[in-house]
Structure formats: structure tokens, C-alpha cells
Length: 161
Ligand SMILES: Cc1cc2nc3c(=O)[nH]c(=O)nc-3n(C[C@H](O)[C@H](O)[C@H](O)COP(=O)(O)O)c2cc1C
Image 1: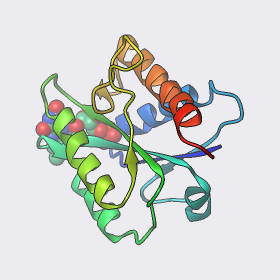
Image 2: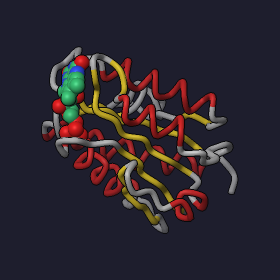
Image 3: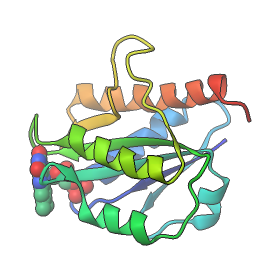
């Protein structure tokens, strides 16, 4: 299964978390991932991907305007794919949850099936998606790996090919 990880990152934090998403997803056998900045998206790989993770920095308590602009103008078809999110922020309570929910809203409108695993698999819970302060504490990084792996396992388990 192919998995696209699309991110916006100016100072590198979200890009680093994107790499952790890739590492976590690849703990499942047979997974091929591609981390792609919004400036350089492989449209063919994306088209072939069943799951798309979207990563954004938090800007003023929501997702970045660059990610919003890209989503609004990319003219790509995400319908039917599983959409998942992750976000970075500088401060606890800095708005990453809201950034993720706003991003999720856009993905719903694009026809995606949203998944976060939530609390369904026990600790650690991922509420709306993975969140890291900057590029993450060790604990936050571990949660990113588990989140990505669990998403893939659930898609394999619950969603037919
Ligand atoms: C314009 C701007 C607005 C920001 N707003 C917030 C914010 O509301 N809350 C917060 O915790 N961090 C905020 N930050 C910090 C970034 O979310 C944080 O450093 C993020 O990890 C940057 O990601 P990047 O390194 O991938 O670009 C802001 C940064 C910028 C540049």
C-alpha cells in the first residue's frame, strides 16, 4: 500500500515529524511512503496512495495559510482516500488541535475518510492527529510513530482494498 505524507514546513519542524510518520507507517509490512512538501508533490504517487497524511505548522491557532492555499488550488482528487493529520506548534495550548480540526474540515469537504485512531487502541490516545511541540519531545516522537503505525493497521483491518 502506498501512503503519501504531504506537509508544509518553513523552519523544518513539520518536515521532521513527516519523516517520523513515514517511519511509523513503514513498521507495517508492504508499506511504501513518500514525504512531500506542498512545493513538490508527486501527483502520480499521490493518486496511487490509499492514505494521505497532511502535516501543518500552527499559525495563529489554526493551520498554515500556505497549506490552505495549496489545498484550495492544487486541483487534485482526494475523494475516497483516508485522510489523517499532524501538526506542530511552539506552545502547549498554542492551537494545534484547532489547526488539525480546521484541516480535517477541508479534507471532509474534499471527500476523504478521516481517521485518527482516537482512543480506540488504548494509550497513547491520538485525539485528532499527532501533535508535536516544535519537532517533538522524545515522548511526542514516540506517539507519532505509534499513531502512524496504528492508522495503517486500522486501514488494512477495516477498509477493504
Ligand atoms: C506566522 C506564525 C504563526 C505562529 N502561530 C503559532 C501559534 O498560534 N501557536 C503556536 O504554538 N505556535 C505558533 N507558531 C510556531 C509554529 O507553529 C512552530 O514553530 C512550528 O513548529 C513551525 O513549523 P515548521 O518548522 O515546520 O515551519 C507560529 C509560527 C509562525 C511563523
